[in-house]
Image (cartoon, rainbow, N blue to C red; front, side, top):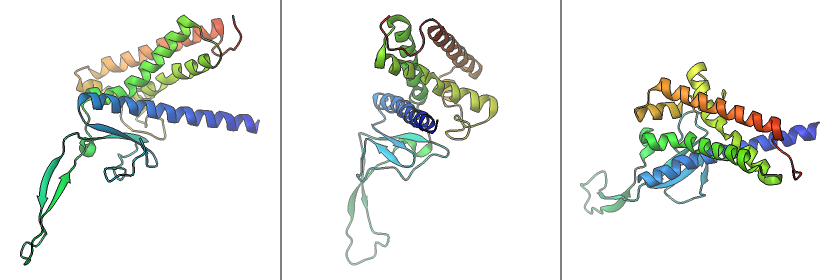
Amino acid sequence: MLKRTFSFVSIAFIYFIITVLIHEAGHAFTGQVYGLGTPSIHVWPGIEVPLDISAWSFSSYWPEHALAYVTFIPETTSLVVEYPVNPHYISVNPQLKIMLEHPNNNNYLPPIVGVMGSGITYAVSLLCTLFLWFCKPIGIVRTFSVFGAFLFYDILSYTIFPVFFGLQHLIFIGGNYAEPILFLAGMGIPSSVSISMVCVLCVLQMIALGYISKSEGLIYTDNR
């Protein structure tokens, strides 16, 4: 019993970390395409992906309640000449410095970049569900497809808990605002419409997975 519990907790933890990375990768990829710069993903308690120990690390910045976040290093930097605090020295040695500012200093992301965190996890979830429905894979491929199909929990929890219960998106941890709903509002979609859309799509997907489970079983390894 203890071994089974440990295995379940370990798998759940790894699954959660993968979800976080996929979510942040959605922000990172969209931001890079949008032109914000080179992305860097930071995961609590301060792990940077890709690993980088250069001077351009922003690991000291951490949004409140966040489990992970993305920063972007602009492709274009500005050069300034910095003089000593007291210019009345006999010898003044100005230094040329690169001034680098990353867009997340003001906690702002363009709406399309912000929404694609949960958006990419839902897209992967939907693709895995359709793959299970039409292709009926078996073995390890089916196992990974099932895990992928349940990734819709990300966009659902980001919506349900902050909007209806005022909780963080994982109840006790994570951001305490409805990220996809707020960014969709920034794109001109009313909150009532986006909340309803998220709930309906996730319910339909749960029904589809329930049907697959009932007719074939979610995980099997035999050839049928």
